[in-house]
Image 1 (cartoon, rainbow over the protein chains, first blue to last red):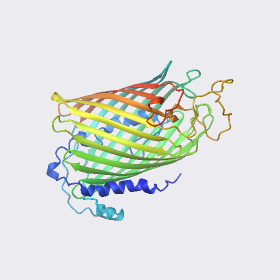
Image 2 (spheres, rainbow over the protein chains, first blue to last red):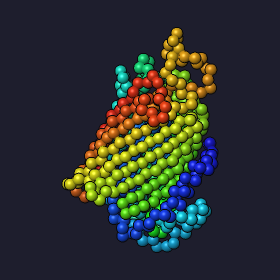
Image 3 (cartoon, rainbow over the protein chains, first blue to last red):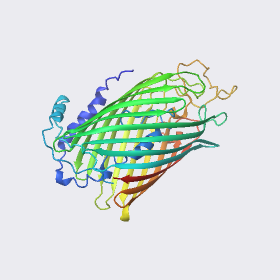
Image 4 (cartoon, each protein chain N blue to C red):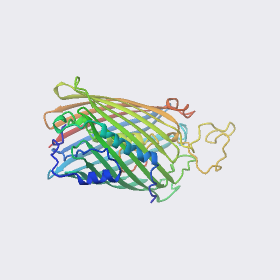
Length: 77
Length: 385
């Protein structure tokens, strides 16, 4: 199996910079999170739509599926 | 539909999160937010129908019924999965978008996936498996994912590792029992920014080795290795005035085939009276061509599929697959959903997709290809328990 190559330094640093940037954001208290608890505010809110969307686009475009890791394959691409 | 409990109080110090932050030399990382187990289960049936078309050719028609479910277990676990059957029929050009000699196909793909998640005070651990079977293609995949949240539950780091093992046996037997193996890596962070804003950034890398050639395309030979990197950002914002939510995302990806792709998407979720929800969406995608893709410029004497200035067999890698050309694509659509009481919901989603060489973001796009259009219809019915 092909080994993963180490990510480019600039590529890997993106996450570190973004995470470090979080320190400048005012923390939101638990009692202020009523709106954030709404389903549509979650990133997995459209989890069932995503199953179809990935299949739709990977059979027409060169970029692979957007969702993370471990998805099943398809002969369509 | 609300599936999650209110966030639990952190009961212990997030040692793992703090150690991880220190290890990554990220002194700015604040204490985080743990994901919580779903409070309710859900089961649903979905149906997808789509049709690909180009000038003078109805290409592929797909009808896909599926079953999806999400089940909480003992308050600290969840099991999620789905089963799908894709019934595929139609014709696909053997090279570029030439209608003459398009290869006809009729196939059924069965796929399933399962993910088990354990919810812990400091985050989550999940294992997943997926498979798919077609008459000429099979795939098995495994994955492990973890998330670590900080104490104030405002920041969550995500990690994922996955592997897939595919087997290719085309009916024309140009190859037999070919393999394709890929390893995926994910690193991400989700951050609560304000009471109405939450953002997520992800880095993904996929390394694959094996048979990437399309066995049904003419003069198609691709490298046996593909390394793919992507970075993405998502931003959800709630509007107090309208009660709606904007879901904006951008993704950049590049790979060892030298394709570069940008994806912008936006959807706006607007709740309406009497349980209705309206979600219009817009997506723009643009990619550059693979470095071994050749344009539809044919030899003036021999004609298609012989290419002007390129002798057959003179290149190590070559492809005339439209999917590896340079183009832009736009999708616009709308989803209409309705809640029926506390337990039932239904939705209909309609999308229109159009792909054109001239819509490429950079450069002029690949020449000589017909526009590709597609219409998608999705219907879903869900029951909560």
